[in-house]
Image (cartoon, rainbow, N blue to C red; front, side):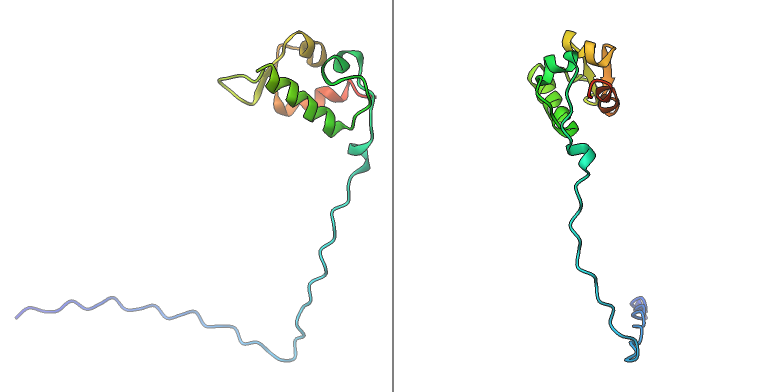
Length: 115
């Protein structure tokens, strides 16, 4: 006589926590809008070396970084093997002080050229 295999036992559903009526429902505070950091938005004058790349008019730090990326993409200065590195041309070498920088250290090197 062949024996039939039993189906595996089903696991019991986890017990739900009982909600008491004495605890008031917690109300969420309305979400606050994120405040803009004024230091990032303050227009700063670029040095002569940086002005050759982004222009001479005062720009916020965020705009300087955007303009640098536009220049880097336009002149194809991003390293093909490692996209995190930027190969400096003559203008960027004056700003960075070396032939190749990573995108993470770029913002720190730019700060020296803004006043």
